[in-house]
Length: 142
Image (cartoon, rainbow, N blue to C red; front, side, top):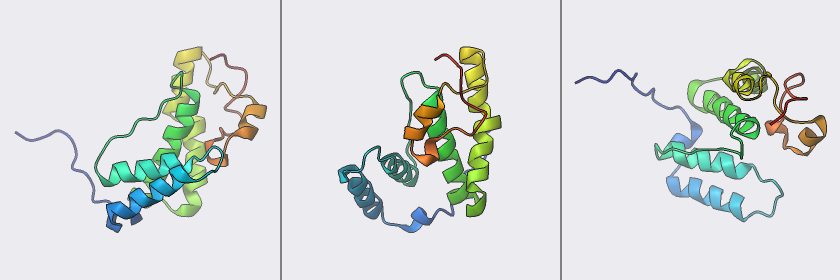
């Protein structure tokens, strides 16, 4: 019996050739660091999971706004590491996914508006890679 799923493309990720112990040490270092809001932990955990062909889930309380920022960041990282997206196009791809992508459609289904429920003041407290683009957030009830 043949599978209807496409075969997985050979990864060209820089982490592909790193020993798993090295990735785990980097993850441990990120966990042990005293940085406030250390989002590097999520990225390192994602690297380890991908390297082991594992699964990682990210979900905030309502599984929409902050989750959307995390999911789109992960997608942009995968596009760069595994599918050859040029590093200079990373931010543009990230912004595009957040302003025109599926996650914004989820907000429409959840709250009736294509806006993430962040205030501009809230976004100032977010790490840069987790900030919604201008025009995609504001008056939306969670």
